[in-house]
Length: 255
Image: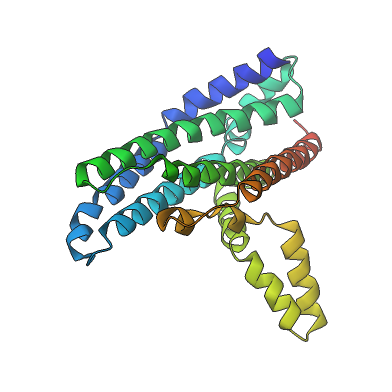
């Protein structure tokens, strides 16, 4: 089982790492972080905070785009090329295929995140801003967020086209950062329909706002270690649930 999953993951990693979209997004991320050199003189005493915030924002944004654009077609591409028939003709279970695809894409994201983070720290050192390891906490939480979002992208990829999957995954990402406001809306709105819809979305969609600790890290605010631990566990449980649902959907498809 491990050999089959790792084989699918390795093959997915090799295919995705050569994707021109991936390379383009990483290059753009580095260019955006490098643009801090232009912004720095205009920061009026807040140079360090602005450079750090811009860098961490760029890392998150471009990794999210990689997850959505590459992950949204990771299963669909196999179906479109009909290679899925060859794979499933071998002694490969469908859940192993889904898990292998997910782990392969996560490996790509880890490498992309590492490259962007290394570039970010290099830029901080070049600009003389200072590069504390404390910033790595924000990167770690971004990784947890990507774990969930990648599982969402893989799930949509099992039954929709890449464009549709990308739109829906981005919608989940966008709404996932607004769930606290959505719950507040449900509490304040008198309409029963709005309340029901808001609460369903609140409890069904991933609360990605839990992973955004960028402001606290940039401004040096204290963080609750227990809250970070629970956020990590939440990401693991939610990801496992999404992969299970993806497998159930994939099992119903006839190949």
